Length: 264
Image 1 (tube, rainbow, N blue to C red):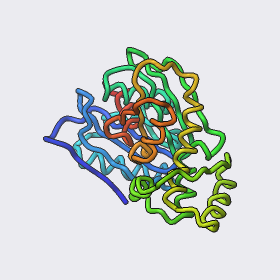
Image 2 (tube, helix red, strand yellow; image 1 turned 120 degrees about the horizontal axis):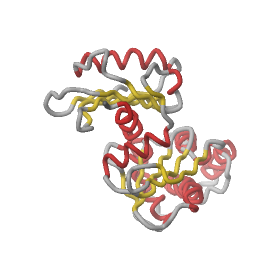
Image 3 (tube, rainbow, N blue to C red; image 1 turned 30 degrees about the vertical axis):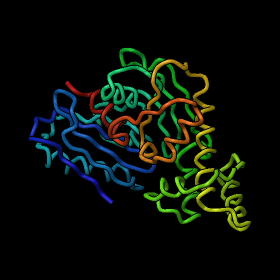
């Protein structure tokens, strides 16, 4: 499915940002004030360079952004994107989140391939960060794989978790083993709703452990597609013992940061 949205009245576009993620491809067009004029969200294609060339051309046409308007790139596939600058996800997520929230704090991004914990300083700089990119069990892929096995639609995750009377513990720390464990739990008659709630609690505990070295003062923010999952936001807040605030347009935070980095 493709999402391509233009916002508000026509404005001069001064920069484009592309976040070529492992599971989704995002792009934004911004004006001189840093406001998002238009954006695109799509599933990531295997040929990320072709997808980027096609979609950036369409975005330029739709917004009137000429060839001189620069592109900033970030994400898993950033090195395959023709851009004025290629930037790390850490830098772009911090910049994008600070631009939207205007205050420092700890940003959590649970991506499809990795999880990032970023401490954003008072000026929007990266003060510290921690990252899990070695195991899928601490990423959004963990949920994607096992919820798929349970045949739970992604847009119904919150409904399933809310119906659960209790969380069914999922103890395996490996996605492959957890998938087998969940199959066994279903066979034993454990409710799917409880398993869904337990899966979120398990992922939240891993993310909270990764965030454990970060200071406890200031706000906790969440970006990325998983931030649109209310069950995950609730589970993460419970694991951290703190309120988790969703950055506006959480899927676009990285792309926004990339665009801001090349804005003239």
